[in-house]
Image (cartoon, rainbow, N blue to C red; front, side, top):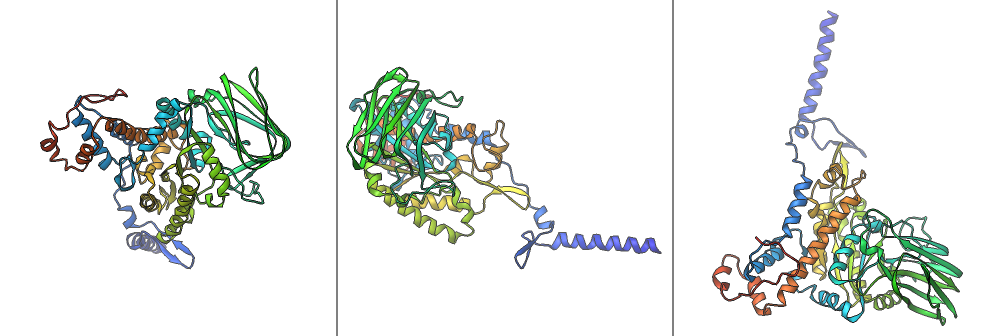
Length: 506
């Protein structure tokens, strides 16, 4: 009798659990502040989501930038038209205006002849720390337009970078971003790196050529050293010693404005030390090379891109002018995700970013703007790794906001593969993202940097091609229905294709 009773109890429990499994809602039941979950039929019966093949994604992205064409101009024009209108890996342009970067390309081309260095400021969060992503873009653009060196660095570097080794002494760093361990100033005179270092009486900054395995060759070539500073005392002196060279000291009169002092060296150097005597605010050090393009990596850990309006406009405007800043890249969004619970949380963030864009336009009127959205970010939901809820909507909203404000946009989230891609980047061999499911590894950052560079330089390829075609014919062709182009343009646009970069032919 006891055995039958025990069996009945067991069967009853199984029946109750089975009913719960079949009828319990997949999203759980909320009781007070707690969400009660139970294995459910609805959840278990969902078809398994197909995992993203990262290698396939990367191959498709690479192929989307490859132009396979014959020697006639018509085929080349077709490639660029399709790229402008259909390629999901392209940089999205406001109003689909393919001339958006034209003036920038023109200045980059003229830099070497003019003996100038035009700067690209790459602002971002911890995703670009250690010069990740920026270094890949730097190498590509300097190969095209000239220039070298690791470019802009802070006087005091809180996070080591792959592109240069540096140390400092006697300087006190203040930063506008980061946690409570970063000292805040009692004023808003932060430099273009959203920080500055105070020298009182004296101090020094030393740098040396990097030996990091991930560093690019161009970063090791330094033949021009500059210091961007302000609010210096009378007789403030800066002395530079590089390898066996001792350069003429630079002495300044007292000034509240921004100054740029530069030493042009007769040859590339491997190491150097800048010594200061007096008082000043050091905003940045520039380690450059021959004239061309500089890509300045400005990583702001923990920042969501809303701090710029808290920086002194006069100082930043003077700095951008002295530095010949021509492109500003803003790469943000990931750090805002923890605060985005619903769609309503996205709207105020976009409003804050619009203020930052307006600020950049005031302080850098000659600069072109490019916004890079967040990467995919992984988080566990009910034991399964998935994209942070709200991230796809935030990414789409950032693109709409950027284009509405006449800012180009690069969709890094979808270039990676979109929803659920970060988990696969982590699993990839070798790993392309870290175990936190947020940050790229060096290998992953190089993939993303290469894709960004390819997207940007494809517009340059189109710019070069358009130098050989009357503008009215370009407009006509780009706006033409693809099904009609062979009929209406064949024989009208016939020129040998200009192939400056060895574009692969069919």
